Length: 480
Image (cartoon, rainbow, N blue to C red):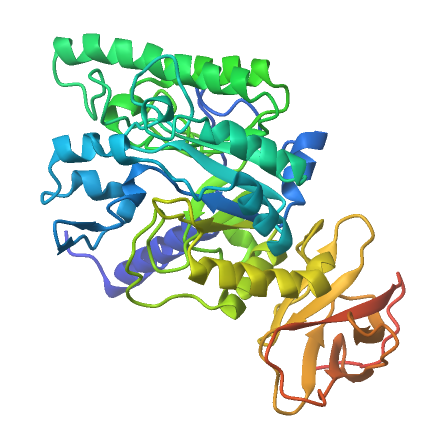
């Protein structure tokens, strides 16, 4: 039967309306029951997690026998991340696996490392106990591939834990699930023989983690790597129970989102979209752009100084970040309720490389003056402006403008929520200064500041406000 044009138009109208309603109607969340998904919804509110949340700045240390070749082998340059050199086709596996016989970092000074981190302003440190190669920087009783069998012999992890604890810097232990040295390790389980061998590897992994927490009971958390293998993803039940056991050993232990998968193979976030772990670890070498990007979760960013070098590589090619760039990344992270963790890769003798030492000193000099905009601070719900970032102290409510891009006009635009009025502004390092605030529109102001000398480092303006329930109505919108 032939339809009239009216019927076609009517049909198209209903189709468009239905499609539009389907797009705009909020989706109703349907959660399925999971045995090994998230065990908590929302943020942890205990004291240990609140301490983590208020760190602001941390340090990462990648160190192991991979620091000996330093990204080179027999005159050939390895372009990847230095700690992965064993996986390189030009690196003979047997030669790499015997490098520990040369590992004798006589210039290693745990107290010196910790002092430098303290002067930089770090509140916590993440230390590699072993990377993917399986070499242990502590004398593990479950393998011979440890520091105890090297010429150095002494417990490196023990020295670092003691040194950083003494400086008041909380210690988190990095542990790689991947272990290329263990005979039972598999990246995937293809046969029954694989599965049998992997059971031994699981026991070994559990034993080493328990050993670490028994040896170093001041540990505040565990930072896992190499958990993306298909073989490990299949171990949802085992990993979940292991996590429970480790948390029972140290109440308040903090474990991020990359440790395990749920029973459907989802990592970081379970099948229902809920985060597994105490904070999100998906921000490696990147930072969220907006507060919406973090979905209400705690998070931190771990960052390298060159583009992608964690362990020691003698050649830093490509862009190397400046202290101003790193300080901006730090402040941006804090302004979005996160922490920022800067990586260091000592060389095979135990030296922190000069470039890292210089950057640590420059960051530390800035932190000496401005640390209060970092520690204990987080997101302020004012509209972001091009000059930089806001932070606010979570306890006192004190508000800060951290300026990285100074307008040539000297006018820093500020937009505030309804019923908020800026009353006073002054430089953090000069509280006696009085910076003019000009109201230019409803909820919009200029903070006028023209420095006497060219600005070479980011600086901070403290801004005080009055909160009121009444709308003072300075500007009346035209009726249309």
